[in-house]
Image (tube, rainbow, N blue to C red; front, side):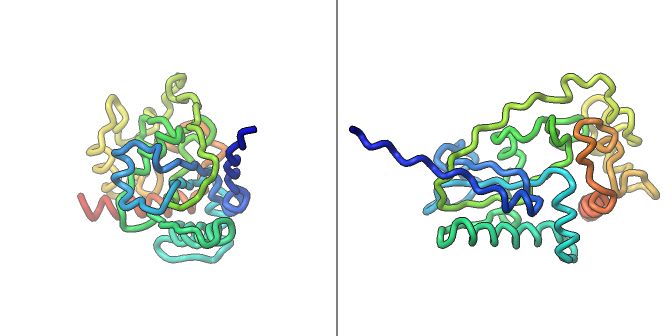
Length: 233
């Protein structure tokens, strides 16, 4: 009788889920499109790429409970948590954390391959479960042999949307027709703009509204983007 090949182990997600990093996707490195692999740098010695994200409020709650502060508490918490997870579940295995880091990674491209999001009028990826209330938090090359994940096959919630609440809520008129980055930026740079530390179009979207970030997390995220806008515009 021919010996059956070993069944790849399942991905140990519980630790990450409890830490708020509750979205994961495992890619076999060899199966990624060549254009994507080229953006990852040297893949020698690694068999898989793990994409880690979060959906909803739990990550921010865990960060607050950890006491981590500073300018980039989400990145710091993510790096600490992912490093602990690697040590616990893949001890001794070579790995390289690409993101957060200095290397430019096509997070949206990886997210599309994972089936994590569809485009939205307000230019933030949207998912039928989480709405726009999720984000990419880590990308790791690792010499692991988990069962690779199939891409999610969810529907595009914007296709069936009748209200277009996001378009109506945008005070800059940036969603009237094709998205206007210039209109969005000009409005956010204005004095006392209502979207300095939030996005009214995004918060008006009803999809996944139960997972909406709290005001402190919104303020943190949009303060960072506003700082970048002021720097480059």
